[in-house]
Image (cartoon, rainbow, N blue to C red):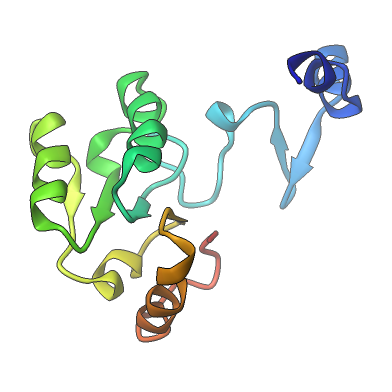
Length: 137
């Protein structure tokens, strides 16, 4: 699988120095992506909805390597104790939200890590939020 990924045309083009562009911005890697709202990190605000093992597997490398500051990240889960434990792991720097609506509003990137049977409920709650037009879901 790794060999197939490394031999893909996109990977080879990156290795040759061919630049890719997203919305007119050069994209050498995710870590150097720069959007109009970019301050410090991949996005000004990343929101994670759903806090299971998969979410923790996504959050840990982003925050521990400094690619995304914890202060610019928020989480929402139906379990307040799960949110609290993740927030405590990052010394309270990662924000927690009381609802999906609050979590989604103002985010540059929303990462939904929920079980398929819960998607309809999450989407119906997100419809109530004022999600930015340039937000990535």
